[in-house]
Image (cartoon, rainbow, N blue to C red; front, side, top):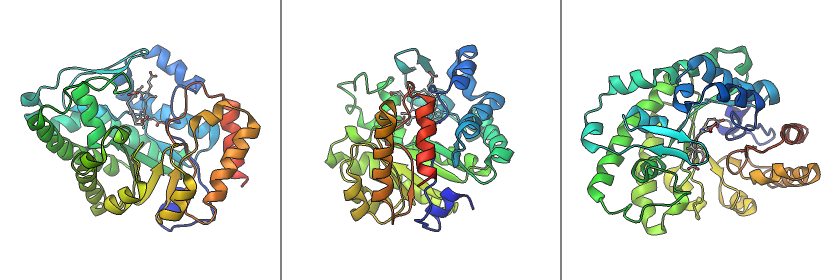
Length: 333
Ligand code: 1CP
């Protein structure tokens, strides 16, 4: 069993494995080299040779304890024939959501479209470099995908004022997402993913009263499905205010926390293994501060099953020496 699985499954608290969200990405010069030659991001995700190579880049450089597949949560709408484009400085731009078209998508067509993702997972899992490491597959949570599919751009830019207007459309899309997310999860597991992480990056946009319908019910359906496949699931509901309530409702195997929550409160309130928390901006500061903040998290979770990670993705401007220093600090603890 890899160290990360020992924390999640065996609840070990005397080891502190580390991986980093967005570890295969723009802060790595070797990624930027490949990216420069491959301006179409979706095509890059569908190039199994390059996407598996990118997945392994951070493992080679930092010896992280997990490989997270280089892909994107928006490969799902792409698989459903909604166009997705990544524009410089704007982020993702999606085409119109055509319900009639999406309702007609067959499982076989969806799986065929995304098959390079699954083949890439196989290559990563079979690589010598991931021998004692966890291979992590992932999906976007239904709510976060709904946000991109209806808003057609990042809600960072703004959420359309009429977003919640068409309840019929929302209900249909959530049902379709439930079906195809399960298909996407199953295929990742069959190709070698040993853990699934569910990213709910925009959970924090919702009011408390709307969480049941948009977050709890649809996420629980996925989590229960993953449990039937006997694979651990990590949930990351970024920006949610009540992590305790979330854990009690969803019962994931591990909870990934964002950088705005108080880790002391989490360590007292939550019994399941915890992942993440430290603000990615800490890596833009000094070695002294990195050490202080890293030790803070490791000390708080000293007697708790804990996987070191950040409280959101690593920032593109992160210095490689600082990442090196972080890994060393965690491994020396
Ligand atoms: O070079 C580039 O311009 C592409 C940047 C990039 C990368 C490296 C995007 C576009 N996606 C990815 C890879 C990616 N995305 C991974 C795999 C690699 C890894 O983690 O190491 C994963 C797990 C994601 C997940 C993802 N994509 C999320 C959830 C996590 C989070 O950051 O909150 C979200 C919200 C996305 C959408 C997305 N894809 C890309 C961008 C720039 C965005 C965010 C846009 C926004 O701000 O709304």
